[in-house]
Image (cartoon, rainbow over all chains, first blue to last red; front, side, top):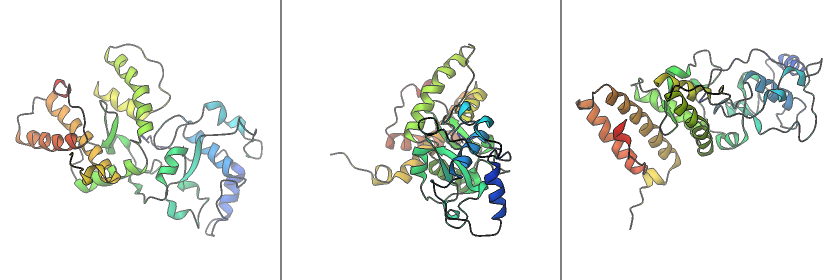
Amino acid sequence: MGMRKIDKTQILATEYQLWYQQLKGQKHPKYSSSHKYYKDVLISLLYCQQGLCAYTEILIAEEERYRLENFDKEGRYIDRGKPESSFSAQLDHFNSHLKEKYGWYWDNFFAISDKINIEKGTQTVDDILKPDSPEYDPHKLLGYNEKRHIFHAHPDIEDESLQLRIENMIFVLGLNQGTIKDNRRAYLEPKKKSLALGKEIEPVYQFFTAFEMIEEKL
Amino acid sequence: MRVFDLGIEGNETFRNRALTKAARLETVLSKLRAENKMDTFEAQKIWADYLKLATKLAWRLDGYEED
């Protein structure tokens, strides 16, 4: 989110997937974070998102916690109890208006940082920055001010209504949220300096989009 | 007594818009500066808009001229 395009076509939670497919066209059972498929969906999304918050790209789970081995033969997540199966990630309904009737709609789910989920709440969304949308391209829609570590609409976009739509969604999805920005700055600033000096850097594991945009400018 | 600007300080949405817009204008200005285009009318207009927002956001501007 920084925001990479996300491919959600591979669902590890196959039991949930079969159950969900049978719900097609019907009103969904009530959504709840204590539902038996909650963790299955959450971990399956973390797999698609490589352990990153779908919107801010901050690391929310290490690979060993979301890889295939965490699912049994029936496609159920193997819950190991606290603390092993506790996450700072939460399921977000991208469009919160769909939560009541279609609360288990796979396309509307993303795994995100718990803090961002609370702040996003029920704010109205615009699909322009939906990370798995076929039209979504962060490099065409977003720009990054690498001095202040702030995301903004792409500087080549001159249409003011489009700028406003993008920048409103940057706000809704928490891309410049204070703590996220602090973490992004702390993580990327040393890498930026090393890149400028032509030094080798450790592989990046979070904030990919911001990093790529910094790299492009050097 | 400092004048409290409700438009910026009292409304989070408005403040956020000012933040992203100022960041975007700063990015555009960096590019124009790198291309030696700061003397153009368009660049001066962007600079004026940027300064207004940056001042309201209480951004530190020191060192910016060296971009």
